Length: 101
Image (cartoon, rainbow, N blue to C red; front, top):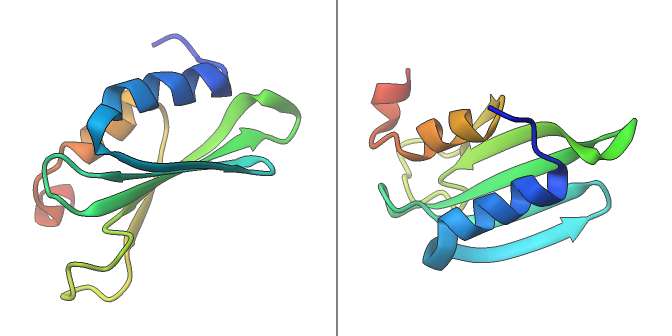
C-alpha cells in the first residue's frame, strides 16, 4: 500500500466513514476522529499523530474501540496501535472483541 500524507490519509478515511463520522478535530499534531462503528454500533475513535520530524507524514495511528464505554463488561476502552489504513479497516470490521484476541 502506498504511504499517504497525513492530509490524504485523513481525507480517505473520512470519505470511507461517510455517514458514520461523528466528529473530526485537529489538536496540535494530533487528529482525532470519532465515528459509529458500522459493524458493532459502538462509538469508536481514531487518533492519528503526525511524525515529529515531518508534520505531513503519519507517525502513529491508535484505534480506540468503544470509546464511550457502552460495553460495561470492560470498563476501559480497548486501544490498539495500527500500522496503516488497511490494518485499521481490519480492526474496524471485527465484529466481536473475542475475535481480536
